[in-house]
Image (cartoon, rainbow, N blue to C red; front, top):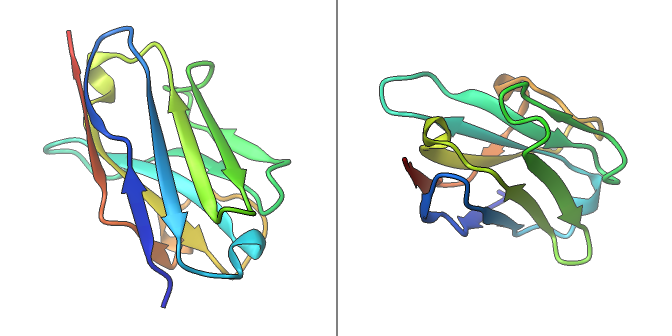
Length: 125
């Protein structure tokens, strides 16, 4: 069983920045694709960003493209989400997810086997 622990959420003003981290409890982290998803109150969970095993391929939701950056440090078994120019509509619980079955990045939540507990991001306007 892989445990994912997110950190870095909080309250920030619109236009500000936050950096989320997700630490994985597995020595096989470097073979996993990783993703970030978010869920706002009353809405379904949605894709935010994904990265392949090496960090060489990544995808972003259109709503965050140009503002968010996903990256990973395989030596630390950690994936990051740098969020800049935050907007009120970015307010949500952010989840990281791990896919041990494929090395390529995916936008599909059902393809991820392991999920973190989530970290709250609140952007005040």
